[in-house]
Amino acid sequence: GRDWRDLAWWLYDHLAFHEVYFFPKLAAFNLTWREDPARRILSYIAPKGTLRAAGREPSETAKERAARYADFPPFRGIKMPG
Image 1 (cartoon, rainbow, N blue to C red):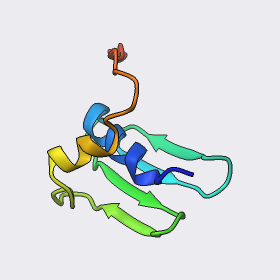
Image 2: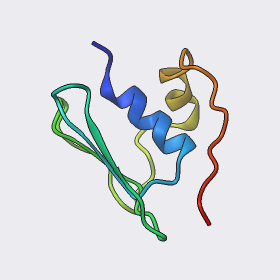
Image 3: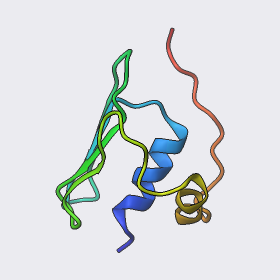
Image 4: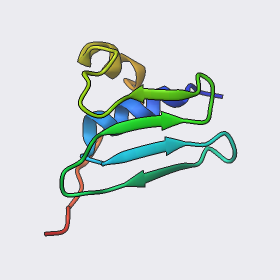
């Protein structure tokens, strides 16, 4: 299968989530929202642990992250409540 970090970085670059956890079964992930998002990315899939901790810069540049999901369908936006 595909590396879970590809989707993790896509989410990071496109949505203002609070925290996302990736799980090894059924390609599942939990996404949480808060008014003041920490933007944490964590996984139970190898490599397990924290991909991005709250308050830290991403481990990959914007260009490196975009290369991971370059073949994803285009993002058409999202209407946020509020």
